[in-house]
Image (cartoon, rainbow, N blue to C red; front, side, top):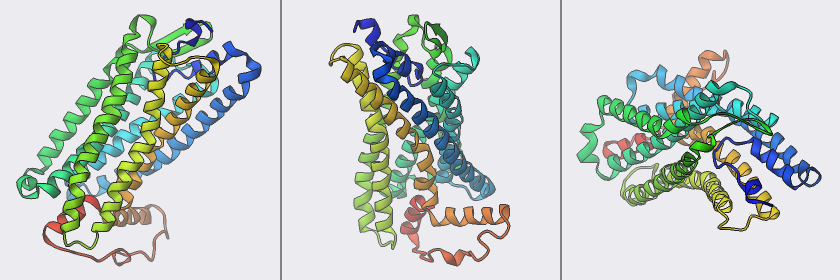
Amino acid sequence: MSGENVTENTTMYDYSSYFTDYEDYGPKNYSDVRKFIQVFLATLYSLVFILGFIGNALVVCVLVKHRNQSNLTDICLFNLALSDLLFVFTLPFYSHYARVGQWTFGDFMCRLISGSHQTGFFSSIFFMVAMTLDRYMIIVHAHRVARYRTMRAAIILTVLVWMLSLFVSLPDFIFIEETEDSHGLECDYPQESKVWERYDLFTINVLGLVIPLLVMVGCYSRIIPTLVTMRTTKKHRIVKLIICIVVVFFFLWAPYNISRFLKYLQERKIIPSDHTWYKNVRMSVTVTQAFAYTHCCLNPIIYAFVGEKFMRRALQLLKKLVPGYGRDLSDSTFGRSTVMSRSSEVTSTFIM
């Protein structure tokens, strides 16, 4: 196969190439692969959209209802849910893109959806990092930073994170466009702007995985020993939550980032690009990408619904929205542990 046929775009959105490039090897051998990708992506993206919308919308509603009792943790959680909502709102478009094999929504929507997708992705990651740093400071350096955790600080942090996310995503708003080739319409970088594909790969790997993972491991490795020495009845639960946060983040995003990097190496002919490697790497990118996107469904569970206070608020809201639901539930249904002083502050930071 020639270099032209092997080369494929490295953007997150070039779904049509998953189908058209396989045709170079013969439809008899790869028709089953194309059908799998079409059904798999369309189905999983639709499922992620439904679950992600329900979970994150409930988080937003609960936090808005109790906005007068909000703290820095609540503000970060609220913006994390907004980020995930922005992310999942783009998935129906990509589900359709994957199913039909070409972009059908026009140039404006191509830029808007691509940029919004990236902005939602990066803001979600950045707010998770902000929550990690906040937990580290309030637990390891509680006496120094407690007075700085004000509403004003939360607003400043929120504005900075959204501005940074938008800035990192600007190339998608500016340079991605609806393009046409022999296989139909695509939503991709044009040939003269292909340099931004390497930028896209770099930012997603470095800002989307490496730096957040290093921050999580570094902060939580200091937090856990501090927690163990505290006299709180929930320290073991908090440690398990910490481990869950890091493990889920790594195992959902690392395979996708590794697959994209392998595809980049393959396109540069640094690793083999025969038909077997070609098929396996493309399939790996497709599958790992779809599962990585499920992280936006898990964020409400990991960061909100594991908490007693938040769960109590959510059930109270559902009880008002759905008559008869949670009729027998009361605050006493949940734990009554009220360890005071620093331990209670630490507990409320993790277990909302």
